[in-house]
Length: 210
Figure (cartoon, rainbow, N blue to C red):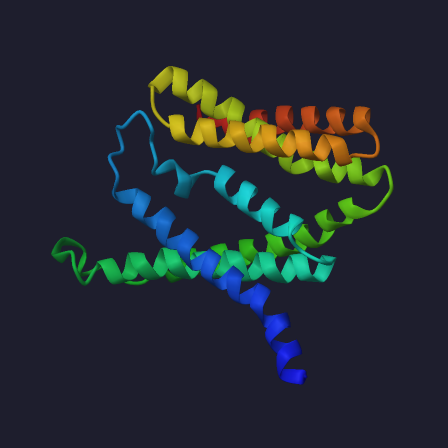
């Protein structure tokens, strides 16, 4: 009985380990694709859209605040391992990179960011409560994706690249936008918050680099 219960409790985290490692390996492999392609697949590893979509999916599939925080941390930490682990192993097959060591500083930095995302996930899970606050919380990832979509649209029309990231962010923003709009207790508050986050996010995090 206890073994069965332990297995049931561990299984969701095992999936997060697998999901995280695969995501890290996938994003690392995109770095080998052509940088001047119209699709710009390597953008997956450098921008926030992939993180926002996948972390939001993890939160939506969680069962409590603590569960959301723990699963998000496990996912992002394993993604970190997959990305920098593969990058380190690659040096053994590429003579021109034999002197490159493990990027410990970046690994630790993104581990800290994983902890920060876990804390944010704990708070975001409160969107399941029947209160006006859920409208604000639901709007945050939607506004973040909208900000990156605007930034990618400006970048794409100026440089004719990163089309994949633009379409990915747009699809994620529309899908979550419609889903969360139906769940938000206050539709006007939800829309206003999403618009404000999109505008501020674009002006602060994307426009300065365009």
